Image (cartoon, rainbow, N blue to C red; front, side):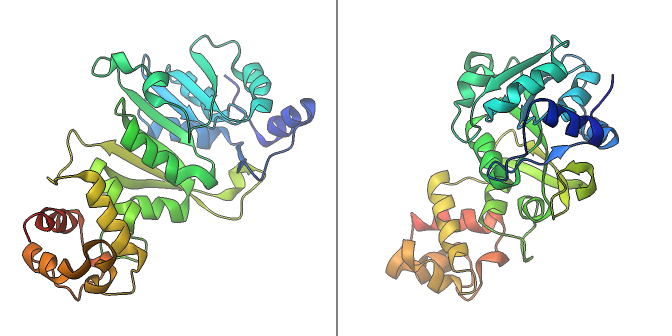
Length: 282
């Protein structure tokens, strides 16, 4: 099976009169070795169901099909659909859907009634400008997706997988840790794209947890506390959490066993959960 190269990518774009859209963050993968590497790291094989968001011209799609996976490719740009159809048209195990990954109903798209019977893996070269919200949406709204292998901007990947204490650790790191285990499994140079972006990419693997590792009265309230803490990350928690805890801030932190002088980046998921639990008793 012939995967896309820089020459074929440019030829396809010229043939269809298209140019990559900056607004949509389009950088098309154009290296067969990288496409096969991603498919291999995703550990998909014959019969596996794969959700691919932002297939572009179909380079990664072909690598997934080559491994025997059945692919549902979700593309927002209607202008690319004829190109993708030409590239993967001879393969019966590829389904194309024109939809916005930030708005589509994943329960309907992936089959709400099949949860528990069929599981999905998301394998995607995510457009840089929507990578974080798409990952969060999948974690929150698509329990059918048990695993992800996504290519994102390096800085985004580092935030998704960051442990407590580092500069990259933030509110999204806590939310990811609540739903999944995440790690960076590789880097990808800009030279494998057409056009080449100005940044390096990271391959991030996320594996959904069977259940959250902490107990909290409300996940929504937990994340509200986290957002408040990181919203003023240079301030101590006794100051940054006042917006949501008011005059009870120090009392809640004491009840949770948290030093009010700590800053948000020092707290792991369990510490944030302790604050959420303490709020109801302080």
